[in-house]
Amino acid sequence: MTSNEPDLSVSLGALELKNPVIAASGTFGYGDEYMDMVDPSLLGGIVVKGLSLKPREGNPPPRIVETPSGMLNAIGLANIGVEAFINEKLPWLRTLDTTVIANIYGHSILEYGEVASALKGADGVDALEVNISCPNVEMGGMAFGTDPKVAGEVTETVLKNTDKPVIVKLSPNVTDITEIAKTVELAGAHAISLINTLTGMSIDVESKRPRLANVSGGLSGPAIRPVAVYMVYRVARSVKVPVIGIGGIMEARDALEFMIAGAKAVQVGTANFVNPRATLDVVEGLKEYCKKKGIPKLSNIIATLET
Image (cartoon, rainbow, N blue to C red; front, side, top):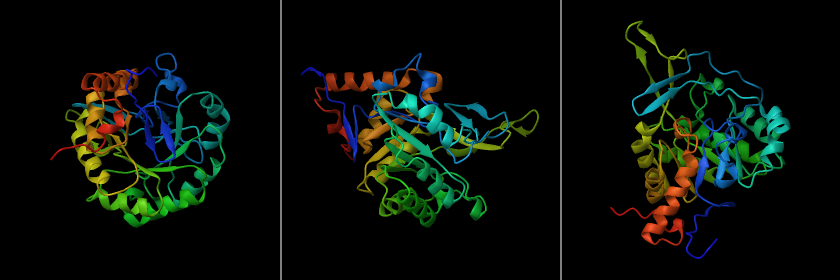
């Protein structure tokens, strides 16, 4: 790095990222799908598609609907399963010069522990991101992330079954997200990422039928960014662990909003579908912002909101 180049590196506890831009789970596949357009080694990190204990086909189509300034998805967490991931995807991921985060989920607390255990000692996985927005089959389908006690139990179970830093990804579909954040921090989470998608639906007025076969889906994209920024702002002031901001980031200025609000890093999701090079564009935009403002180290802007 030359003396006139700003330092974009950030720390997420034990994780050291070359820059704060991470490709979000579910929008970047397992990394190799974007290789013709994006070199993952130029990013701060990538979060792979959500992994379950066994392979999952997901929901029937249609499962994606475009909405004003965003999209609804009801993919249903389709994935190849943790065993196939370790055997088929991880060897290539090990070759990357970037932080690799495995997103995991389960439909019971035991299942979360089993997926975490399967990845224990897996060379090439630097951290786990725990998706607690999944339906809990043991509690009638209520999402794990909507009950502080259950969210804490999931966090504790994953920690007992892993040797890697644990990031817990929060659902925004709650009354008070800070309560969930404080609970998972107390349970031992090393970092917190937010927000996951907002629940929504879209109706075809001609057929009077839902546009998604699953009826409802997760809303993402620029439409949710103001909600996400506010929730990151509140959580960052409620916990001591690092916070990762997610929600409708399309360009560098969007990422800067999250960082000024208190996020130490950001994840870019839906933008990858619109512009496959969105993550790299955000990195370059952050660098240019620092140069223009005379900021030697990007981390200096974290939590600098003036109110």
